[in-house]
Length: 374
View (cartoon, rainbow, N blue to C red):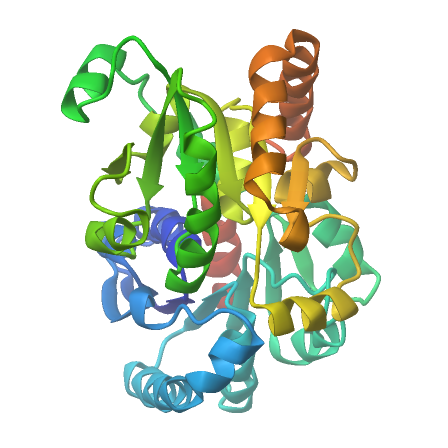
């Protein structure tokens, strides 16, 4: 069968790559065309549009890049029509993907949504669109299933694919990692995960860097996103900054980190699943933040807290995201043993709530079976 997958950012490329691998295993003759990145390409998808060109965040940024988004939309419709897939699989990226879903449904394509938009948080009216234009919703968070059931949306909870991804991690060789990245073997690491998109990295990293001088006994290492060149990070932090940068080694870095300062997003969940104490930060364009705050219907911004429905990790949002506040929280995470113990217990409960491994396989099986039956 033929599959067309659309992912618009780094996390979508990661989850999409595992889904591609599962589809190819269950359907060896599968032809897969995709919007994504190098991970999806390596697993056998023909990537026709790279997510690097798609990652526009915030209301203001979207308006500025409206012409580019429109061109991408027109290209996508034409490309899908020519490929004529048996299944279209949308991965998050709702501003773009829901428009494609509306068009695709009218054209008679089977539409699947893997990694739900956060309609439970804001823009809840989108659930009615999803009900009309998506044939099957595949959720990765347990509370999403309950949410969609309330609206009679055909939905299945498949588990979270990050559990699969992290279960595959090899234990990192500390000595080799330190040597390869020119790290000081006598100092513990504090990881900096500033995000994966230009706007957020520039906004977040400038604040994170102010924390470095407050912890002279530790070394700071930035996990660079594959979507951005290392030179972009160096441009923000300066050539003489007392930090190291690693590329495509985030999980290895986290295994060796005593704490992490993390931009809100998938990385907060990855950090928790690797059992690293973290403080979650986020600072948006002021106008975008005001609009988002007005529309949001959730108490938390961090995935860990949303899933657990309580405050597990500290969130420093907008004006609360200062170097002083970050430093205070990191100090607590590093020195308060009682808190460390409680945090690790919460992380174990988080893994249990997210279900067993095998999310990608369950999602692939559901898609293939649905198409064959319908």
